[in-house]
Length: 443
Image 1: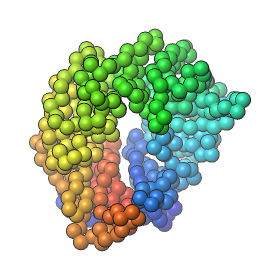
Image 2: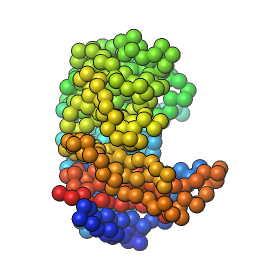
Image 3: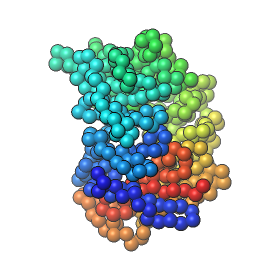
Image 4: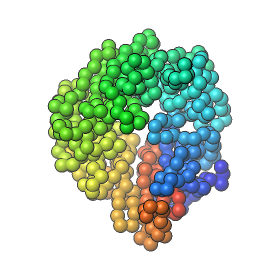
């Protein structure tokens, strides 16, 4: 593992210090800070497809101070489910190995398996409760040749596991803000096979309710985790079936957010949704249309954009206020939208994939030019922009050809802010494979 890490300062100027964090056989796919900012989770490419995309990532965990690294010895996260989660204090990490859950100290000083619950053959998708006392996970079992999925609560301290939802269905779930309940969107496994089912389960009493939301299309793939809204009183779920957005309360009452209420074009399906951190506002994206709804009042202020983001991956809510950044992917730039009234303003030309600073005052984003993709920083106080990186115009990477006639350009993308806001880690491809870098910002 030591040969894979370098953590070397390669450029220092009055404005910043740039570090190269990794030197790996096939490059870095993604990166993530622990909640306390002391460790970095890196996903390393295990190979590449014919189109140049990375295959299953292999994770390593790196200590920011000592630079020591260790490998959980697992295949990492996929687009379908998350294979690890950090404890809220960042001191521990839980991960999936051989379909069992393992718990480790962040520096791997203590690693131990979590026993499987009764009649359970595998566990996946671990998720810590907000207070860090419990881990929710989806367990599978086989009966009469058919796989069933249950939602379990596991205690890292070692007390007996609790099956919170039986026959929950394969899907995704989220803790309520207070940690007193879980919302799970799964595929119904009884006589309603083929339906999306949203469960709400209270941890203390074990009381559960569910609502069937509609048929799952054949191309549904992985279900998205629901959002808790309105101070944890309701959950919002999205299914790729028109119109596809529902609210369910803790009594099981269902509210269908129809197209007329959301003012979506009649020929568009509701593709995805994203919710503000306070759970009050929802943005719903459909094709090139985007609608905004105040979930507490039902108001739907029009958004002052000609063409809007068409998936929630292009929505980034401020961590400290009720506005969000979005980009349209068609050269229209990076826009800032105020959820209270829908007013919008383009704040950066050709900006894409923004990442908010923890204090909500800055955006790191990447921007294309004829040489490749570079990282920029936007100060939201005075709207000033600064270029953080700049690919060289004569970079030899531009001459590399991959199959199918695609050309690889240099890029600096995927900004990930250190939790204290003092630095930005990112993925940079200036050589044959992408690696992890860190930009220490001025204080």
